[in-house]
Image (cartoon, rainbow, N blue to C red; front, side):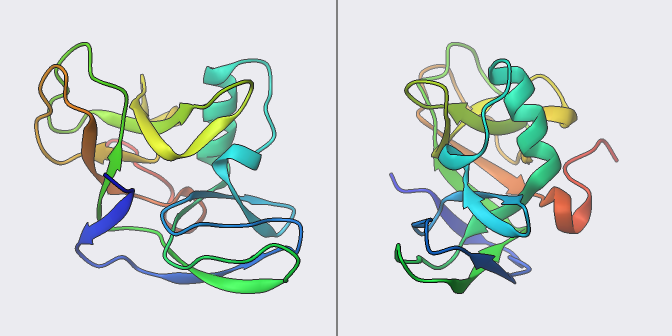
Amino acid sequence: MPARHIYGDGKAVRVKTTASTMTNVGDLLGLVTGASQPAQLFPWTTDLVTTQAAFHGAFVGGAADASAINVDSDILAYTAGIHQYPCAALGSAANIGTFVGPAKAAGNNLDAQTVAVVADAAHAIGRTVEHAVVGQTYLKFEMVGTVTFGGPQVP
C-alpha cells in the first residue's frame, strides 16, 4: 500500500528541492537549510526519538510531486488532510487521536514512506483518524505540517 493523501484539504504548498535530492510522491519532507528533503535524508542525531523530535520541528508535509536528481525544482507538498501510510504490523491497537511520526529505516535513517506510533506531539507529524487493530499494517492520520501549521499539538 503506497503512502498517499486520501481526502480533505491537502493545503498544498510549493517547496524547493536541490539537485542532490530525489523526491518520490508520498515522501515525508523536512525543511533543511531552506530546501525540502525526504525523511531518509534528514540528519540523524543521537537516536530515533531525538531524530523524530528534530524532524517534527522541520516537518513540511508529504510530497505530492516527484523530483529528479540533478535538477533543482519546486514541488507541491501536502501540509494537511487525511493520509494513509504503511506501518510495521501493530503490536497493540491504536485509538483515534494516537500520535504518528516517521518510522526508522535501515541504519540510522528515518523512513520517508513509513510511519509509526510515537509517544507525543513533540515527535509527531499527525494523529490517527480511525481505530487501528493489532496486526494492522497501515495508519490513517490527519497530517499537520509543523513548519506551516505548528504541528499536531493537543487542541
